[in-house]
Length: 255
Image (cartoon, helix red, strand yellow):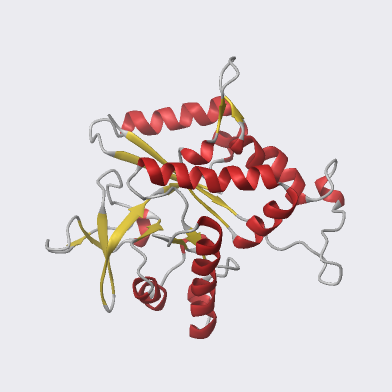
């Protein structure tokens, strides 16, 4: 059976007025007060309390997907949408209980900075603050950290290793050489030609090997497939069907 692996990346920048600490009215988000409230109504809340089918079952989707929430968004949710915030934390605890301590949540670079564009001090701060915020909220150490736009370089990968992160999520075209096990020889591949259904994988950086698992996934970026639930279901179905002969996994990441 082919496994469908979805990673949801959820982030909003801080929208509070620095003088008042409150989010002001944002007319473009009408009829909602601001964009945090609008996106919560359309995304964060419905995923926490998903009504499946015609019965009364309410599903916590975060319990069934890999996900990360930006610290600034979690701070807003904790203050303004506490029920959704608690469902997110509960999903991680329950998934960790099912999967031997491996929860669905991963950390994020604190301010969603593009880490390769940061200087070393800022890059280190983004990673450390992201890890500490995760520990504070989820009560455990993160196993991975979401890289904004999946951007990475040698310095970023080195810091992830130094902070004991076990895997990273990248796009298929970012891998130049791969191997399935750390004791196997490296295989050079063409950009984007990697078979992402064969997991786990290791990737190599210029200064040595990133001896951690790398989850390579395709981004859900097709506007058509996200226009309706039926379009999305059809698109996922085609992805699963095309990989059925390999029978491993189909990875998708979405904002």
